[in-house]
Image (cartoon, rainbow, N blue to C red; front, side, top):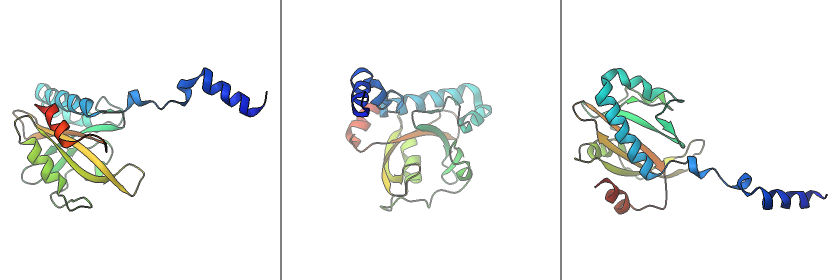
Length: 167
């Protein structure tokens, strides 16, 4: 059998081989759900639970994204980050995207809303230099000094649609 005929046989009879594994990709709905689950987890387990959010192979890393924990006072700072632990504890109030958005300040503002909120900013995807649109949901963890958030790269969904999901 010629190589091209074998190639066509694989495509026709095994189409899932060529289909991207989108079922594992995070979505805005899964970001919202995981952030809410993370907030509940922290409320139930206290500060002892925080280290689990740094585990790259743990339950808070999924579908190409992760949950992070932050504190907003006295300045925006990360308490956990499973991918870039070097950001933990740093004052991130001066960190801005390519358009000049101080997105950690915006994440803290979003967390302060009664139901949390979405923030959009430009940030490079892992392994890339060119910034892409990233949307992150952030919410307060009731009864604590923490907020939790997660985000994905998505060019297609509007902020109106995202905000309607929160309500």
